[in-house]
Image 1 (cartoon, rainbow, N blue to C red):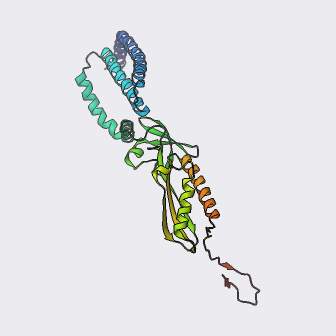
Image 2 (image 1 turned 180 degrees about the vertical axis):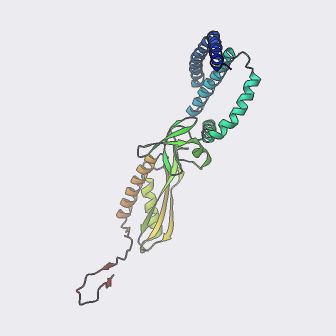
Image 3 (image 1 turned 30 degrees about the horizontal axis):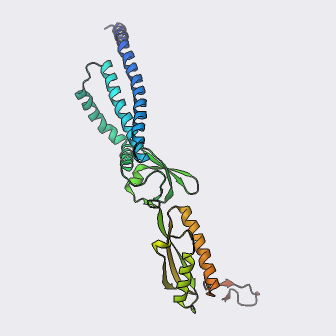
Length: 290
């Protein structure tokens, strides 16, 4: 058997087939180029239409992605039909069905994050700009994609979080409302009139401009501590971390000033210190002095 002749004939047939397919390949490339142009214009038109509504930014990104993906699927299918005329929608779906199973197992995490990203964009909660906490990550949501979410920590670092983590775990949203409740604990000495101390603390907190006094201020005698009776002080202020820190700062200062003016002591915790005293060799070493 002439192997060289057979190989030469096959190469010649392949070359002739490639030359014959060049017009189809050129048309397919043209279709891909047109698809790229149409997808860009379609996204712009989608942005113009959606921009007139009050839709969330994350949902807007999802609509743009769906429009672009749909146009590309149609365009690539048309290009594939031009190159392979025998290709039909039924055969394509059958091939995609078989391939989807294998691809699904190989890229399970990617598809999980993709579906989680779609659901995160669709639901109303956790919008771009919210301050959240999830799995020890606290920060501001800067960007939501179909696979990951960008969270800027309060210290400035950027954390890229897979969407599946945000979807499967509880997410605490600090800025879901404009206000949230803050609290501190303040102790007074045991010889203090607790009713009088509570009134002084309440008046001091009401005088802070960042406190929403209309939503109520709570001053509860909480517990007997080692050297004081502790009050739990709760009030409403802004929901961002910055608002909370500023509000606590002003409340602590106001409560301290009010108690000082009323002559009410804020006692130090009673602490017993134990240490080793150095003694001469002739004495007993290691005596404990309290």
